[in-house]
Length: 596
Image (cartoon, rainbow, N blue to C red; front, side, top):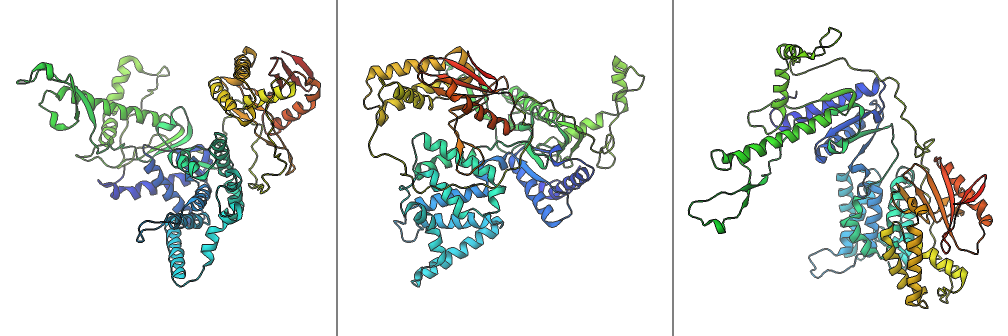
C-alpha cells in the first residue's frame, strides 16, 4: 500500500517498488518473458515504460530486458517507420503558403523530418525537437543571407535522387526502398528489420489496391495504417506490458499490477432512465426514456433505484476486471495501490475492506459450512496487513519452464533477423514491351494466363466480384466480350467453391499470394502462386496451371517450394497443382504425384 492521497504523492513509490521487485525476479532466474505488468489504461503503461527506460540508463548493472507492449507493436510507433513517413511527407509537400506569416507545408514537413531523423539516431524527444528547431532556424538565417545550406540540400535529396524532383515519376515501393537505403541508420537495419518488412508489406498491399501515389498513401496512413500491428514471435528477453483486457486468456509466471486501485474516471457517464407520468405534462408527449448523467444528486429522486443499480454494476465490472488480472499469475502476484481516501473513486478501500473481513472468524465460518480440507488442515489462511504490506507465501525462484505442446504451426527453431537488405531498382521500365498484349480467351496459353491473373486478386470468395471487376476494366481485357468475362466469372466461382479447395479460400489462418521467397543469393527468389496456413495445421503451396501444362514438368519446382517453407521452420508442408480451366488438382510430394 503506497503512502499519499494524490497520485503525484505516491506514484514514485509505486514505480520504485515495481523496479525493486523486477530486479529481484530477474536476478532469481526469471526471464523477462515470464513477467507481465498489467495496467488498466495505456497511459499508465507508457509511464512505466519511461520509468524503466530511465532506470536502465541510470543503472548499467540492472538485468537486461527489452519491452513489448500494445503500443510498441504498432507500426506508427516505430521511430524508423516514422522517419520514412516523414521523408514521404517532405517529398509530397508543396512550397506554397497563402499567408507569409505562416509556414509552408514543405517547411513543416522538413521540421518533422529533422525531428524524426534526430530521434532515429538515439536522441530523446526533447533533444530531437531542440536540434530540429536549431537546424530550421539556421536554414532560415542562411536563406535570408542568400546561402544554400547543406541541410536544405539534404532535405531535398530523396526527391531528387529517386524521383528526379517529381514524386510521381517512380513507384511508391521503390521510393520507400530508396529512402531506407539513404536515410535509415545502418544499426537500425537490423534492430528495425521486423518493422521495415512489415511497413513494406503495408505499402505493397496499398499499391496493389490501385492507389500508388504518395498523398493517397499518407492520408490512409494517418487515418488507419499507422495503427497496423506487427506480429512477432514470442521473445523471452522481452518484458510484457499490456492492459488487463488484453491479458484475458494469457498466463505469466510473475504478474505485477502496480495500479490495482482502478481509479474511476471523472468523466460523467450517461444512462437511460425510464420515465413514468410527470404531473402537468401530457403522457402522449412524454418520451418513454431519457438520457441523464449519473450523479449522487439522484438520491431521493425517482431515478434513485436506477442510479443505485447502475453504480453497483460499475463496481462489479471493476471487481471482475481485478479477478481477470489476479488470475493471470502462476508463481507470483504483486499488486499495489494507494491508501484509501474518503473521497477517492477507486477500489483501494474495497481491497482493504476485503482483507480486513477475511480474518480468523471468517475462515472458521467457511470451515463450519463444510468447506474444511480432507487432510484435516484448513485450506483457508486468515489475511491481515503487517503495516502497509500483505504477504502470502514466500518469494519464488524460477524453476524449469514447462514445455508447451508443439503443433504443426510451431517453428522448429527461431532465427535471428539479419540486416534489412534494400534492393532499389531505378530501371523500372527494363524488360518491358512498348506494345500492348491483350487477353485472347480462344488461345489455351493466354486463357490460362487470364485465369491465373484473375485468381491473384482472390483471397476469399467475397473477393470474386472485385476480381472480375478488375478484369473487366483491365487494359489487357479490351478484346474480351461480356460473354467471355461471364465465362471467366463462372470458372472462378467453381474453382474457389470446389469442396476439395475450400480450405485454401475459407477458414485459413494466413495466406500469402505471389509473395517472393528468398532462396539465398541476392538476385534469386521464388514466387509460388498461393501459400496457405490451413485451419488443420498444414502449410499448403498451390500453383495455378492450365490444361496443356503437364504435372511432371512442375514436380521439381513444387518440391523446391516445399523445401523452402520447411527451412523457414514449418512442418506438415503440402504441394498442389490446381488446373483452373479443368478443375483438376494434383498433389505433389517428394515420393510422387497423385490426382485428388
